[in-house]
Image 1 (cartoon, protein in one colour):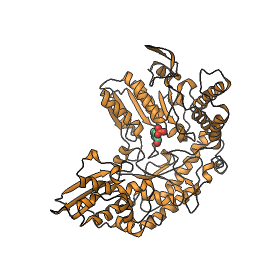
Image 2 (cartoon, rainbow over the protein chains, first blue to last red):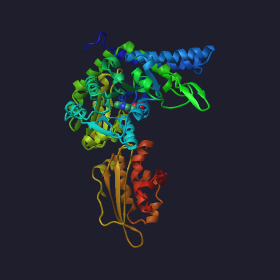
Image 3 (cartoon, rainbow over the protein chains, first blue to last red):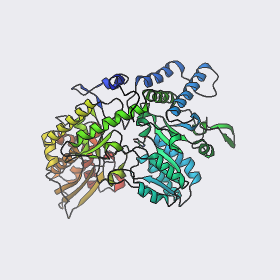
Image 4 (tube, each protein chain N blue to C red):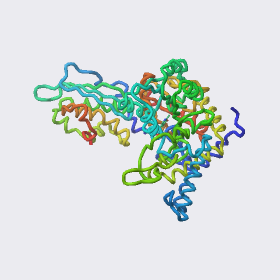
Length: 412
Length: 133
Ligand SMILES: Cc1ncc(COP(=O)(O)O)c(C=O)c1O
């Protein structure tokens, strides 16, 4: 996967104003290794939202005045830019608050219409809480059954176990395309193909894949896909649900209110067409515009180039972390993962690791990263996670390694 | 940062003086910090005048949570249950001798929360951060 133009990281770092920030009284240069939680934002995104508020702000749809028309056009062009990034048609892209809301939309609208007691939903052991709890709630309410594809000893999606589970004819297969803890990339296309063979609908949790990999919903043949703007250099407060048009058309609305209706009478209403049917109330307009700018920014740089840079980072990080005595990285080999390194350190709690690194301006995350069952499976309480994105450099990895040696010294 | 990792904290984390589980005991309580999964349980033995004769803690978590538990348990030996009930967040901060941000303060206060819930004889559902504010 050699991209046409490799990333010029030094150059693109200048697009991210926050990267010049200094941390603490010692004025340490920020080393941001927490993009899996949320990514930093380029000037393009910040300016798009700022300019909108300075120049165009109005509520969208139905307005006749100039600002309302401009705002509506900008909101819809945000949708087009997001759709273009994943090769969807704009009508198939519903704006939500985030990945979590996108998954809940499917759980409330599609699943509660189509699933009955006893119906099977297949998930995996490495799901984020957001692709777990909505289905546990449905299990409690409807009596659907949940089964989990295990991870193999080398932290990969267990294809053999999945094939076995498919014999029970699930109605839905909902899985992550990239684990936010292990970094494991799952074979989404094959998972979806096999699910379709037994007539199941598929939902891809793409919160970590769309920001970091080229993702093409047509090529994958995904039925639903959920992702968040804030993890892909866009603003917080907005995400997307992709759905195949025929599925979306057949689904009842999720929330009721303005915008999602065509007509309303005292005792009845008719729903608007897709995607508006699922966008009740005034949406996050500036955020949609920022989301569009983020998608365009990534597409302009090239997802191939971003993925190739991260692959290189991933190899470099693993090589250097695994050299440190007492450090164990939890996850597959670099060939099968995104640039995420979750690790445990003998005798030192992740909170302490993160705190000591912070004193050197290094931002990492400590905890179970909203994937508690996965940590239980791996027999650990929590991990320290360093994650990397297009703006990270090998020098920053070197600083991380140096910081870890400092932790070892303090805890001697 | 160097202040945060004072020698006493690292020392108590690595070799706590009061780690264990007392049986029999007059008070037992346990709780988790949902943010990071830290866990603390405490057991206390009291005499007929409600004075703490012996106490111990067990659990897992970061250096701040474990060291503060150890120091807190040490400090309550010889105290009456009423005195234990009136302990506050400032007492723990004083024991640790460091300034903590809001996240790490939660780590530091987990043992106090567990101890006071036990002293008051609360049920699992009744524990709240109000105990340590
Ligand atoms: C794999 C995965 N799924 C879902 C989510 C939830 O995303 P959000 O909090 O934006 O809804 C995350 C975020 O951490 C994630 O990493």
